[in-house]
Length: 142
Length: 142
Length: 142
Length: 142
Picture: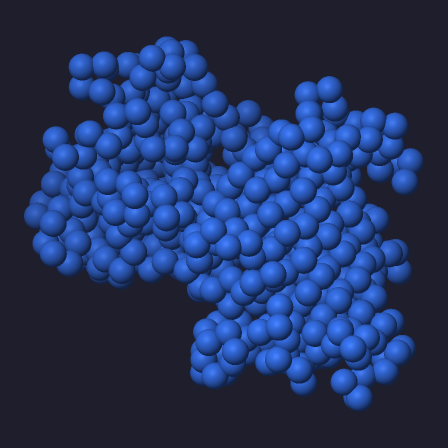
């Protein structure tokens, strides 16, 4: 945990494709017409099919699990607030920043934001994780 | 909103396959060895590859978006606490129950639980959503 | 091997979709922004997202393994030179031609080319394979 | 290019799943029964379905394009020799090592090996690439 410092950050970007959303629908069983029915979506307020909120959220999984804090991290609690729809073709920048270090409980708080290519905040949230060095110890105590 | 009542619930189940996890890795970019490296996972505390936490969480998307409250629902806030690992082949029962109705702010709170086939709680959480009838109105006020 | 003759050829074509590239990223773990970040790619020299080179190359696998020489073929050595980027939506014609027959070592050389819909050579290469009739014998000698 | 040194290396690992092979078949059109027909494969010399050779090869794409030399790398030439079959469930360690630096032609040679979980060499090869710093210049001269 000594390597992590408050303010440390990491970012990744991905353009959300139609196939991402369709596969996500297949994995989760969420075939809400908002995601897979172009006609329905066209007449809705959003005007077009949008990605599943949890798909946007899940982009943080790679960031947290592979970069910050990285391999060996165990997720404890996640929170996400959705602010704007994510459309097919949007390029989402997922950013994580260490905002809390609790050595006693061995937990790290990472603030998360997701912005689209227009710089709009589409979601924001937080991940509380057990960082890698002590990952092996944590689960058995829980 | 008159149709929703406190205590109303819905449930769905799915057996998590290796392909679910592998596709999820491809969508999110999370190639953490815990998910895709059987040798690494075997020597870890979990003893085998596990599903991504957000995949388990995302199973609720279908439940909320298609059943409770159903088509037209807009997710506002999600929270999830991970309690146990989900292994390939586990059958996860995702359950949602209405625990809060805020007519003034037009929001519904749904408590979420995820259990595996052994009856163990693998995750629990909460979704705050705008229910369908007023979905069209909500976004513009936000 | 008597069926194969120098100059014999086969061809197949496929339009490369966004989902092909996205799934390929998921299988291989190659999330290079050139493939999955439209904003990054737009500002790069290529001007748009491009397919993974090995995806183009892999189109030859079907040609060799199913047509020339066909089912039972065992790949020994592959070489590929990349000449031009392959964009999403490009239709790639993969062509193979028998250019060498080594009866003693039981190997066939197939020259490979990949052209896009504009007739531009995007890649060229070579496959050295053990043809079907003797596939069963070969591996044990190796 | 000054950052790269002879002997520098990187490695990644992945367990090859049935879904990896099936999706790869769908992308490439290679439905050779060796990959997708369990009955045929059972009676063949290999005894079970095996992964496509180019799939194994493609694991290097992520290593080269994201780690060594990393983002911005342009593939020029790839060569691969297949030594042993890769079965579903095998965990493949892909390793790259810088073995050549040609400053004048701005090219880097990376030796590649693929080993399974038993330590057996399943494939070996080489990638000649243009490293990131000069990626923008190269294509136009070619």
